[in-house]
Length: 117
Image 1 (tube, helix red, strand yellow):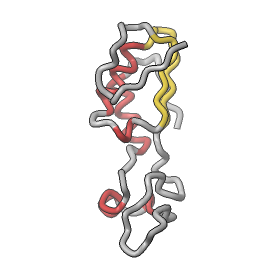
Image 2 (image 1 turned 90 degrees about the vertical axis):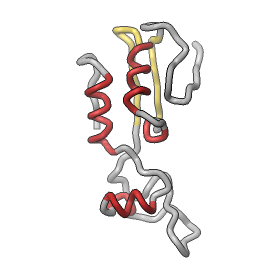
Image 3 (image 1 turned 180 degrees about the vertical axis):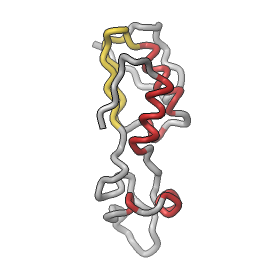
């Protein structure tokens, strides 16, 4: 077994060479989720396993923290539930949310994948 760490762009592996591809809370940090997913799908064998997790937009606490004035503790409850405009302004990094992830999977992957929310 061998691991490989990339920055979310081109994966330096041959097509269909990986039995398992994992990505744990990474997609919200790459420049283009579609490119990252396309690469994951490209290197995955036809019967391989793709394991991807993304943050839950509706979780009680914003998982990346907040940059709010006068608050040194940045795990503020319910920030993820704020209107998008406010959340994107004050959250340290806005998460993808399941709808955006589903759209990425729909365009990057074939029918052999399913999204479990």
